[in-house]
Amino acid sequence: MIYAGLDLHKNFSVITMMDSQGREAVKQRKLPNNGEIIELLQTFNEPVTVAMEATRGWYWLYDLLEEHGMEVKLSHPLKTKAIASAKIKNDKIDSKVLAHLLRSDLFTLVVCASEGCSHAAGAPSLSGQLGKNPNRGKEQDPRHFGQE
Image (cartoon, rainbow, N blue to C red; front, side, top):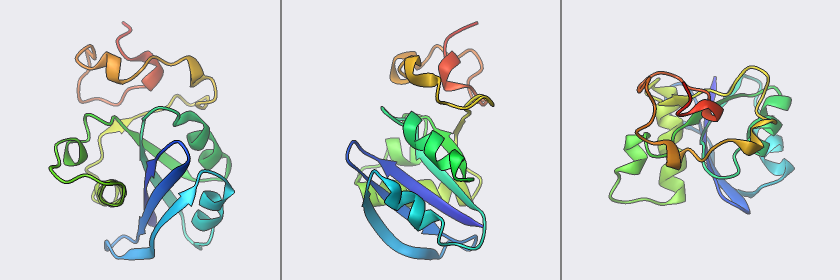
């Protein structure tokens, strides 16, 4: 299994990939947000699971990764304490922490509904929903935060 931590930005992403022992499978890369991400992730002859934060504009990449057979795990940016409370933050550190949390099964999940995320364009902002989640600590569909 390959675990990939992906720090998504508007024009590029930083990706860290590691094996189940925590060794980097590929040197950390900064890639443009296009097909290069898919090409890199498809170079492995084993399953790839991608961890990324549910920040602005995550929908298109989530759908693209799933279309290419990758399992994608989303985390709530402010609830990923290893990143949110870090004193030193940068893209490389964030992507590496995401990969380690995923590999170690310490990842705080936000789950996308089974019909896919392509309809989530109208989803409420996750940051505006903090503190309104009645099921704190449980997996939630990001489109239903704060709804009863």
